[in-house]
Length: 117
Image (cartoon, rainbow, N blue to C red; front, side, top):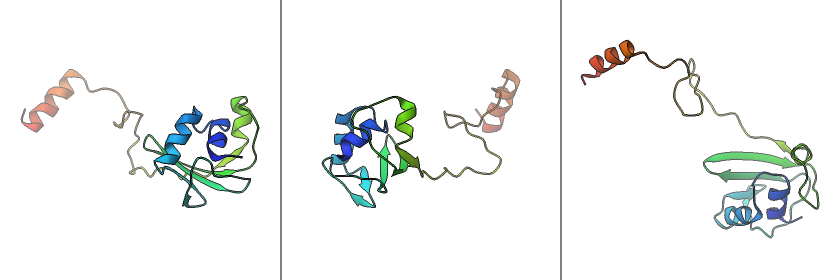
């Protein structure tokens, strides 16, 4: 199966044209080697995809001819993506800030006084 088609069928990327662009820019590797969109992939190959600053590493387990339901698409690969290291004691939310309640007005004034603002 073609690499760009597998990326779309497995729902690693939304559109096949996006898969082509990622391959053209060298953001997709098959078994550690840069690959073109026309490269053939098979079960057992390891794909490394970098898209929008996010790294995905997957091992291909199977393939489909057409795009199917998301549950079925997840069975086509095994996710090998390493966990992002976090500093101890810091839980980050999606915005990159420390999670927890927002500072109160009083807390904000104290922070501003410390910063000298």
